[in-house]
Image 1 (cartoon, rainbow, N blue to C red):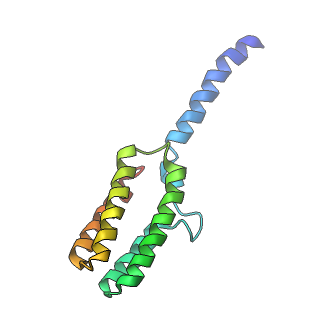
Image 2 (cartoon, one colour; image 1 turned 120 degrees about the vertical axis):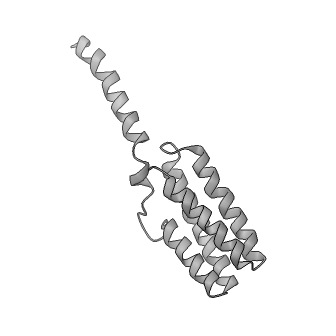
Image 3 (cartoon, one colour; image 1 turned 135 degrees about the vertical axis):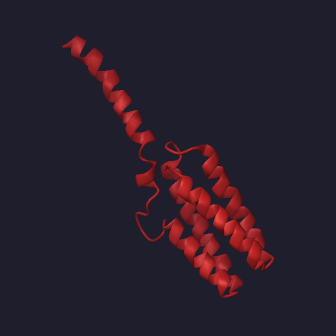
Length: 121
């Protein structure tokens, strides 16, 4: 019995770690409306295209809150550089929205989407 446990414990441990590391694509999906990061990015884009900067700022705050929820779930299963990339893009996007720079805001939004798509591929 002891010998079986000696072999079973490492196998189970490796399986658990593998499941955590490979779960990024599942964990980045929204589990509700509050953590739909991609949906909030779409709403930010529509507000920018409509030149509604106050709504764009509000939607960006919603996207940042959703990103915080998603980051907590995926932090062990994705590359840290991709998480930082999204954080930096969202910060720059906030500045572009405050400046009402539609071209720059759309560029930052595209960069944030690119980082989002590369997470857990």
